[in-house]
Amino acid sequence: MKKKMLAAVFSALLIFTMSVSLFACGGNGNEDNGDNEKPATYSVTYQKSEAGEVGTLPTDETKYQAGAKVTLKSPMLALEGYIFMGWNDGTDTYLPSQEYTMPAKFVIFVAKWKATSIDVVYYDDTTAESEVYAKQNYGFDDSVVLPEPPQKKGFTFGGWGTYLSTEANFTADYVFTQSDKEAGKIEVFAIWIPNDDGDEETPA
Image 1 (cartoon, rainbow, N blue to C red):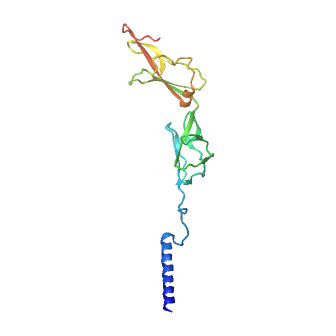
Image 2: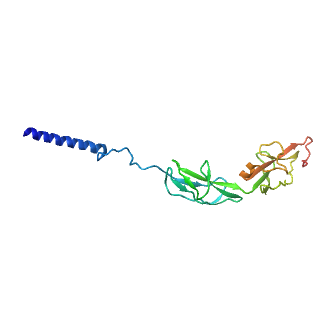
Image 3: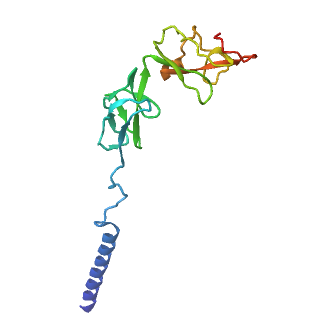
């Protein structure tokens, strides 16, 4: 009789010990591989470009999981002389209302613009002290009409040159390049040729 009671007590203690061990390892004894963790989420931010547009940026307070579809918002921005081309994520440009597949990271969409005309800014010299001499605005297919040449004592005006150019490469027959059109602006500088006799400058 005593042996049976001891066996029963031993069995009860064994069951109790196993139950405590299971509780410490996982609660109810079910396997737990960490699948109950919440998936990571990421935010979307809209940002202005450095072109100087005005207006209010759209906002998105939603947190997205990787692979989720994000409907891009319409801009509330304006930039004189430019049209809005979409939102750029650093690689591609997407139109408003277009669906974007969320990657496993935070995304910043920057406003992308396209110029509808080109500003030409003329400087009176190539030095750091040069000042704006004239400004013009052209359509992409317009012909260039050069301003009256400036004057500089002891030098002859040699024409207008683009940045870092030592030759007068901006002339009346200049054709705007694709790079000019994308930038929407081109800067040109007066090129000066020293006079041997130091006389007043005579326009070329």
